[in-house]
Amino acid sequence: MGDRETWRWGETLYQPCHTVTPSPRHRVILLEGGIMARLGVNIDHIATVRQARGVMYPDPVTAAGIVELAGADGIVCHLREDRRHIQDRDLRLLKEVVQTRLNLEMAATEEMIRIALATKPDIVTLVPEKREELTTEGGLDVIKSHQPLKKGVQRLQKGGIPVSLFVDPRKDQIKASEEVGANSIEIHTGHYSDAKNAAEADEELKKILDAVAEASHRNLQIAAGHGLNYVNVQRIAEIREIEELNIGHSIIARAVLVGLDRAVREMIALIKK
Ligand code: PXP
Image (cartoon, rainbow, N blue to C red; front, side, top):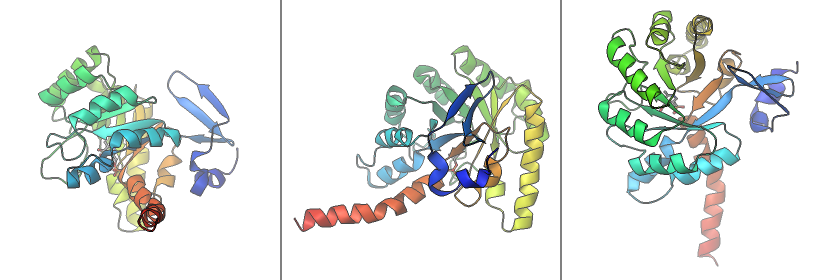
């Protein structure tokens, strides 16, 4: 095995894979001797920038193509009840153009279930949603919402859509996720990401490790996400049982900064032509 650090950091994050070994549960990519989780890129905040002006750009559909060309394994978008970023039109077009895997995050409401059944994304991730929140603030309470979630999961699966549940790293929620028939769970990494110091991060990481251990001996595939960024992702990426990381805000935020120099130069070139 190679030293994971040599291939995980910096520009080596998206190196082409050397060997792809399909297995019943995982697609395991061997990368210079290491194992890499799939990366799903959440493009909601491309739409946030567009909606701030009510114009046609930047278009999350164009962004999805660029994300795929850069080597991501999937596109994630969240159609919220208030349509603050992704619009119904975006979802329809993403379904048409995404060539990897389209993961639709949504609340388990009647409206969203109907939209999902009509659109047929590759997977639905059910999340809790509050109108006033800035972003998804916590995992689903699968224990409390057992019956409605079970019904929602069954309806989506009957429509041919696998379902993931976004849950806090808690054993009881993971057990309940299996009981309602979910195909996968996505472990909420928000508290780990928001940790104020190293001790707090260690404590949150421990909860994630315990949750992963619980999920891996149940019939559940494991993803993780929320708040992951260029500083904190590595410790999560090193957990082998986590098959997929879903990351949005930090990637779009970095794109704004790494792309700013070029964007300014292009405008200067037009003005000074
Ligand atoms: N996974 C889920 C279930 C989410 O709700 C979100 C945010 O939409 C993400 C991952 C991505 O989180 P972030 O934008 O903080 O990377």
